Length: 449
Image (tube, rainbow, N blue to C red; front, side):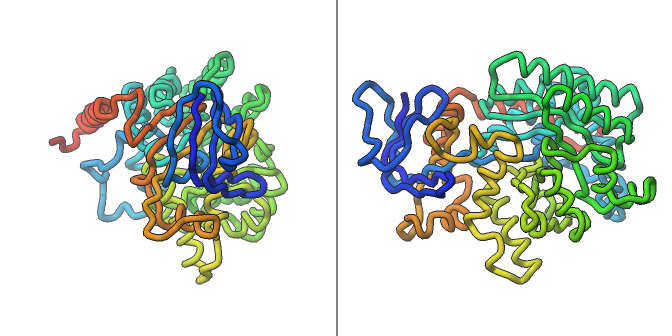
């Protein structure tokens, strides 16, 4: 048994309790007791104590959208053809990302990149991550490579392969078969990493392929993930082909449902689509920071107003949920010139409990409560002012960063203690990732050191 004692606990439970000088009993992989020290007290039997005096305990963050392998494609030494004129996302992704990265990565690059990205996310307080795995060159077995990296890191996750039709029917079938095979494999074992079914986009997949992925997923009770409207092109394309915007098209082909998580939704019809998503209880992964980096301005205000469940995603290229929370808050306040929008409590909910709901895991994670999984983060309280019930949400969202993450527990196990990984050689993992990145660069005839 572990006991986290003397913490300021931000529970994110139904009452949004903040507990001063609180204890958390961890038995096995779950929270056994949680509450003020005078009520919970300390066990009389043997236990391992974690003194959290001057620390803040929060639920582990949930990242609802990732491309974990992409640690190997950060800080590239080459920007792609026609760098000066290739100014639109759809052009850049088709002429650069697909050709030089997504279609080139192999299993070792998937594994090495995933491991480092998971370590970075754990350092940022992320304990659960949902991954959309790219890399048709690594089929079959792409999901096993990503799974291996996640297992080594110790993170909780939900992963599926990004089934796509842009490389032909044979590759599309391989992608679907990869999802089926890994989902059955993951379901037959006890593991923090589970399977789901992923499909790329409306503009890279035929109607028949999207429907086939949904049918195979629903036959097994699996969840579905898809990119949707991160760029204007999604709806331009479906309007050109079918006379319908992207989300209306997905409704009409029977794709939308409570089992669906759509990433981005940056460029939707703000008058009709929020109601549509709410009607089908579709979940949305809001990737505020990565979208802003690519020049998108995603607007989640009307979705949330309509009752859509919106979580936050890392999207692979950045890894600090603190930055992502602040970006989500800032872009909406700037857009609407309203400093009361996206208050700290709401943004922290999006990073925890709403993220858990996006993955269908709200009964197990997303808040610190007795009976739930012991996925929690201890933040050092280095504030220049006293932190208590009235300002702790503001402190977490506005002031904290990954440097404040002291310890991370997943499934009741200490994964990070006093800023050091317990079971992983982080430096060796980074060196493996650097070597994998060099091999990718060499394969593209890019500059190398």
